[in-house]
Amino acid sequence: MAMRQTPLTCSGHTRPVVDLAFSGITPYGYFLISACKDGKPMLRQGDTGDWIGTFLGHKGAVWGATLNKDATKAATAAADFTAKVWDAVSGDELMTLAHKHIVKTVDFTQDSNYLLTGGQDKLLRIYDLNKPEAEPKEISGHTSGIKKALWCSEDKQILSADDKTVRLWDHATMTEVKSLTFNMSVSSMEYIPEGEILVITYGRSIAFHSAVSLDPIKSFEAPATINSASLHPEKEFLVAGGEDFKLYKYDYNSGEELESYKGHFGPIHCVRFSPDGELYASGSEDGTLRLWQTVVGKTYGLWKCVLPEEDSGELAKPKISFPETTEEELEEIASENSDSIYSSTPEVKA
Amino acid sequence: MARTMQTPLTIPVPVLRLPRGPDGLSRGFAPDGRRAPLMPEGPEAPGSAVVRDSRESQEQQARAALRERYLRSLLAMVGHQVSFTLHEGVHVTAHFGATDLDVANFYVSQLQTPIGVQAEALLRCSDIIAYSFKP
Image 1 (spheres, chains in turn green, yellow):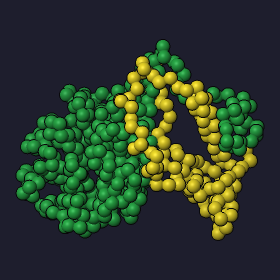
Image 2 (tube, chains in turn cyan, blue; image 1 turned 90 degrees about the vertical axis):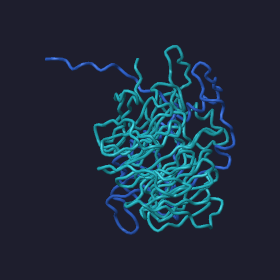
Image 3 (cartoon, chains in turn brown, blue; image 1 turned 45 degrees about the vertical axis):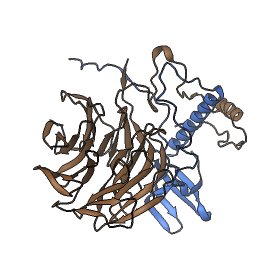
Image 4 (cartoon, chains in turn yellow, brown; image 1 turned 180 degrees about the horizontal axis):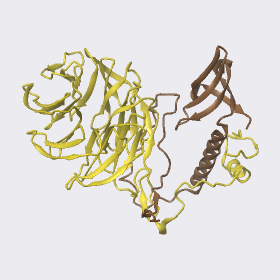
């Protein structure tokens, strides 16, 4: 019997989810942060989507969010003209970095010593997190607002995207090395360190470039305008989502569309594979994040595959019996909390 | 008349539960939370499935049954007049419309408040102490 994808919906945000990022794999698993226009970015357990905490402090929409590799720190970029660095274990705000306009993107170096920011003031800024009072180093050159900025090549270079260009900068000299120009608005950018691949989306195109030379590798066209795409860590698949509310999964080698899923109630703004490639997360205008299995039917996280010979009842199968019998069972189990929540009212017809 | 092609029967992948949402009361980051217990090595393989404690599974069944009853009670409330007791002794009544996924907000209409009637409103569940209705 074929299995159908069951997406897991993570709710809690009250406005569109515009960015999301996973941490690396830590001894405690991996984590997911979501940026939302409600100004309250949230941290979740990466494999289950369980909410861990909400970073409170921003006074405007949060446009970008990221975690450092070991998920001990988080950084957020917001419409209140600040980027903030947070302790991702306690939820406390560690630093507020004032900017001159809306901040859209933040990225930690591998060692978490530096934070890269970019936004509507068209400047890239590099903050030394060990010297929070020091002025950041600034790189100018973009002619429109910066949408995404990422460290690459072991933090020796920087990739940044504005409306129609993607630029590569040398960190040490702070100068532009190369740039790409598009005739359509760049909607997203993802950097894959293993293999130095850059994933860029614009219009209906999902394009792959070398992160070192910016030379094109290949590109695919989707059925609708794509807002974000992500390449699987083993580079077998890519997933993409956009304006038609659907998620698409492609074979990276052949470009064949493998699966597509409806589920979101609004355009998809961001998609990312988890660091182990077992699932991907999508964030949408509808205010939800959804987790999707890469291999549908595999047991992982909250997905539990029940094979025909294995119906051991491990699934939480509620006894759908009715109030009378259930009441007794419930009373047996309830110990100190003995106030009955429901009095024995007649069964209500749903 | 040609029959439309039968799509193969598929069953949705079963899930243990839904992801937990915010509690609506705090900002989270519980001190005894995720950093304390170290993860077991890798996800559980189907063959070496953990044998659940029978008390745990009883509790899980009870939780599931309670939740199902609660969800049915919410369904039964739709379109009915509900009386809400809010903080500081405030009482309001409204027609219940719907709740969101986490039951964090109730969508109501014709909300009768001490300062007038609101045609449509969202009541934050964390503000509600109790509510009652007659089906």
